[in-house]
Each structure stands twice: as structure tokens, then as C-alpha cells.
Length: 574
Image (cartoon, helix red, strand yellow):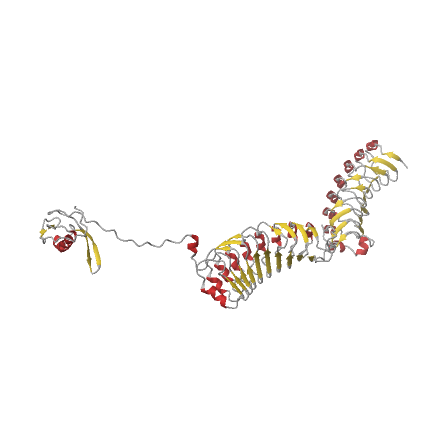
């Protein structure tokens, strides 16, 4: 057997056309890159079973005329497989780089070797990782021996391999980290016994498990494709600690998540939004979680039953995501309780129109007004609670549509500052609690609401801690001032005109209580108004010496003047 390194000068054998064979020796060192210059080589390149090391030269991709075999297995080669080897588009029988120390991935360019049709593709017993490229599905003529065993390959086996319609046996996948199920497209190629060749072909993988699931001793029963419930029960061994793993997000078949009464810390992973089949239960009460609610939970559009994010030792903050309005199939219970949410109530929650049981937004720091859209939750039959927040302004009359409530309507301990809507008097079905106390309600109590206190309501607390009976505008300081009565000011008589003074006095002619207009005494015939002027003159203390009709010079006689009462105001001389 030959030893030492492979001479680089062999690369000058550019006219060698059939075979280049170095197999079964003790060659050491690297494969010379110069061997890639043997571009006439068309049959076999074999350097397997030596002690060759270092990396595979990219220049070997120049041996593109090879049509039988390329064998470099059972050496000490390292590094990645060059993408240039995908240029062996004429290769039919053997590609083998197994039993080395190769790392990296299987290049997608290997899918170009579409002439492979007979015996073997072997890259097993290395340290390859990543997923198998879907491009390998282009090998439509391959018939046997696909060996990728003993690596660190992961992910799902590509369904594209099911296109190998001619494939019969020896599909070796064992000792990797493949996950999910064996694709039905591959199983359909043949019976599993002949397809995989032996019973160990698929062992030591994670078939049947969710891809991406990493074994966690805290959750020994999770990770299988059959997992539909992520549930942790209290046990004598104590509560589960640490963070909620982001890999919960790969359990996409789960329909409920119950991790209440544990000791989890940290935040809710955004990856939980991938659990799009969730439809039964979210319950995370009494942990030590903090941070905000991921908006991604709005993807749980199948959710129908119980959505519980409650306090205990949790200290959730931030806003209530508007995306929760996408949970339009919710029909049972919606609770955001005892957190530190500081936002307004999203109007989008008014889309939860199928809610039939209970709606809780309590013991937070929610502020501003109550959206009128919450009146759309009129199918709710049990409880509607908004108590212990910082809600203010007027209570929407639309809440009166929730007339099917039976167990409770509680909005106490807020800052509502309006009159109580008469529409709340429609809650005649309530037999539990009707509590509006400890707000700033004002004005008189509607008789319809007062009537509930004498019905079957178990706990009616309305007036306590409010301003019932006091005008709302008085509390707000916006009432219009009452009119102040005024006393006419006494008039001081003016000087009496001298004898012979001609005055012009305006007067009003009224016939049958209807005013005909205001006239100056020189705009109508003198004879018509002589009597009126005498009365005016008497009242004003003036002496009427003559009345002259305008434009004619005709004068009407006037009676002697009558002294006016002393308290009457004298006219102003013209």
C-alpha cells in the first residue's frame, strides 16, 4: 500500500479519460486541488479508504464528465461538502462521502445530479446537520441506497422524496433528529419493510414528534404529535419553575394550555401565537409572569371556551391587545383579571358577539370611557364585570342591551361621572349582584333602576359612594346661573318745554289690541291724531299749541294744556 501525500503533479494527467484510482492505501494529507484539472476523466474517481484529511477541494467540481462513480468515503476529511460537486450532472451510479468528519448541510445543489439511478448515495456517518434539501426530489430515476444515517440531520423528511417512483429499498435515516411523521408520499413507494431495508432504519429519530421540540425534563409527556393538551398539574414535587419555553409554539395541535398554579417567571412567549388550533382553554393564573400579552394570541381564531389571564403573582402590564377582538368565536368566558393593564378598553372587544357566559375586565388600571361597542355582547347571560379600574366619564346607554344577565353586573370602584342610564333598569333577570357603588354618579336615581332594589336582585348597591340626588352640572360647575330679579330704576323728570315749543313725539297706534305701527306725529293727518297728541301732551307736561298737517299747512285747534303728573319724565325738545 502506498503512503505519504498524494502528489500534486497528478493533476497534470489531463488526458486520463476513464479511471483515477487511489483507493485502499494509506495516503495522508489533503486531496490536491490540482486533481480538479483532470477534466477528461469520465468514469471513476476513487480515493476512498485512505487517511486523507483537510477539506474537499472545490476544484473537484471540475470533474463534470464523471458518469460512474465519485468515491471519497472512509477518510478523515472535514469541513463542508462543496456546492460545486452538484455539477456532477452525468453521474449515474455512486456518490459516496460517508464515514468522514464532514460538517455543514447537504447542499441543495446536489439536486442537480438528476442522472443518479442505480446503486448508492452515501453521506452517512458524518456530522452533517440541517434539513434534507427538497431539491433531492428531482432524482426521479434513483432506485436504491439512500444513506444519510448517523448524522445530526433534523426537520421533517421532505415529501418531495416521494417522487422517487423507482425507489425500492435501503432508505437509511436512522440516528438523526428527523421529526414529524414519515411522509405518506414516501411510505407509499413500497412497504416499509422493503423500503427501509431493516428494522432499525428509522430508529433513533424523533418521528412522531413535533419538529423543533427539544426534550425538556420538566415536560416529559410533551412533544409528541399526539399532544393536544399542554397541561401541568400541581404535584407534591412542587411547582414548575423557569421560563415558559418558546418551543411550546411548535405544539401546533394543542387545543388548550393550562399552566396555572406553577412558578413560571418571565414573559409569555410570542411563539404561543402559533397554536392556531387552540379552542378550549387558556389558564395561566397564579404564576410570577410579567410583561405584556402577545398580540399574536389574536391568531387563536378557533378559541371558543375559556380565556383566562389572571393575576395571583402575575404582574402583566401594557395594553390590552386589540387583536383579541379576533376571537369572535368566544362563547364561554373571557377574563383579564388583577393585572396592571393601563390602556383603554379596545373597541374591538365589541366583536365578541357570541359571548354567552361571562366577561371580566376587572382589578386593572384600565382608563377612559367604556366603548359603546360592548353593548354588542348582548348574548351574555351570566356576568359582566368592569369593577376596580379607572374608568370614567358617562356610562354608555348601550350597556342596557345586556338584559339577559342573571348573576351580576358590577362596575363599582371606578370614576364614572354621569347620571345612571335609565336603560339599566332593563336588567330585571339579575338575581345576583347589581353594584354601581363608589363612583361619581350624580343626578336623581332613575325609577327604573330604583325598582331593581325591590326585585330579586341579591345585592343592590348603587347610592353608596356616589352623588345621587346632586345635579351633575352642579358637581362639574357647569350649571347655568339662575336669573337675578331687577328693580326698575326711578326716572328723574326733565325740564318742561316752554310755551309755543313744537315737539315731535313718536307714538303707537293700536286698534283691537293689534299694533298698526309706530309713527311720528307729523306723518299722518293732524285731524286724525289731535286727540292722541293731547293725551301725550298731558302725560308729558307739554303744551300742544298747534297740529299741522304735513304738506298742507292746515292746522287743527288744540285744547288748553293740562299739567302733567310730577313723576312723569318730560320729553326731549326736538
